[in-house]
Amino acid sequence: MISSEATFIYGIFSNAAGIAGNVFAFVLFISPIPTFRRIIRNKSTEQFSGLPYIYGLLNCLICLWYGLPIICPGIILVATVNSIGAMFQLIYITTFITFAENVKKVKMIGLLVAVFGVFAAIAFVSLRLLDPSMRQVFVGSLSVASLISMFASPLFIINLVVRTKSVEFMPFYLSLSTFLMSISFFAYGVLKHDLFIYVPNGIGTVLGVLQLALYAYFSKGSREDSRREPLISSYR
Image (cartoon, rainbow, N blue to C red; front, side):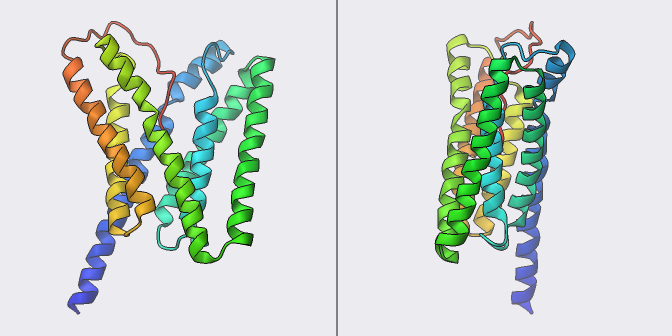
């Protein structure tokens, strides 16, 4: 009886961590909306780059694939958050292509086709050439590499904050949401005993703490005299 109760409580905590991660990830997914409002309003992509959304889509597709029961049973909350993320990235990419100049439009379409090609290749290899245990290791390793590179992307912003001694280009709520999402999925991965989840999100948690610490330090001397919209967004 004690064992079953412990298992039940354990499941509640792990699911709570995963649900929290989904909520905080949703905040990150909607963070580019002001940028795309500007693009739609001006009917131009201006100097904005579509690459973060292309990469975000690939990242979401790989992690979505890893979270499916056919690859790794018992972590469906990883699949749900990344299915939502993939949907948002597709909307952003479609909007970007709609208002981009012809050269950018062709480049973005080519990259979008390449993303689906890479994902199709990953799915084919994992299903046709690997047994279930190797399938999980293969897709899990790809998801770790993708997530670590994604979490490393704010290093550019961190470097900019240190050089300029200003947090103008590091929005507080975006940094906070990244930290909360990372620590939620870190806890989820630990409770699920899945290193492919807790390792990259552990790194993301450390980088999130660093961003918040820098914000606290440099915001004291920063003046909020600019309301520019961020050009770079982070995803789970």
